[in-house]
Length: 82
Ligand SMILES: [Zn+2]
Image: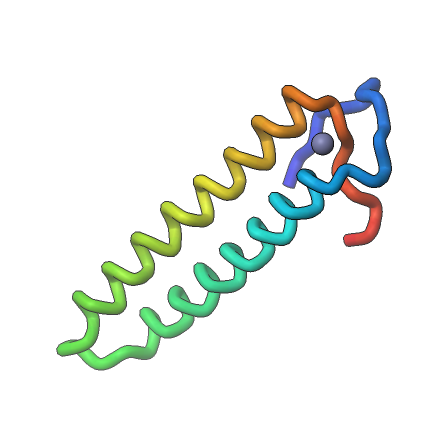
């Protein structure tokens, strides 16, 4: 992930950031899992798994956007531990 923020004010303990970041990680994991399932699912399960993948993808995008917007508005940085 490319981050371009360099001169942003650092606030190491932003609770909201932590919450949004946690959600993004969770949604990323769900998305990755369902994609893996999509690769190996049976033909008759494909549609259902594909729909699950699509909604997981949207949740992931929303979480990513929410974190991005929060950082832009609040000026807090990404957390160091990653
Ligand atoms: Zn923040």
